[in-house]
Length: 197
Image (tube, rainbow, N blue to C red):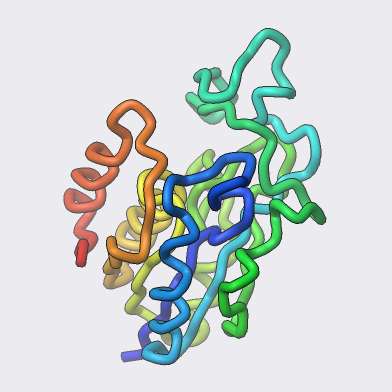
């Protein structure tokens, strides 16, 4: 049974010194690099926003980063500008191995954010990852990366919902933990049938 490692958003802006730094985000890079050879396939995702993206607080007058706003597809956390296409912040952490089979860019539609590697935040617009995995006969996934309580969680829950066998290696993830979001994500992943290792 082919088994893929899905490396979520290990990019400069999510590491210390970045625009949306996850505490300890760079600490997981050696562990992820060491794991890569144990899998049949390695897929990396990359947050890839156009300038002025609708999820940026700077695109909404009078709003601050981490405020909540209502979008046509539901509630949306407003973020500092981050992972803007072509910037250093959008690049992978310089020590991360990027010799995987596929680099999937998400969040490039200006009017909708994308936490999950499988769907935009409307939960219906696909990224194409499911089709790629199915075409390659991959049904077992292990997820690592940033951040545990946002992009890793949404990707893992969607993968489980789509019928994949999903494990999250918690030691190779780090969380933002916004108002208890980590505890909520952990219980939601367990409820979705995700194995937390």
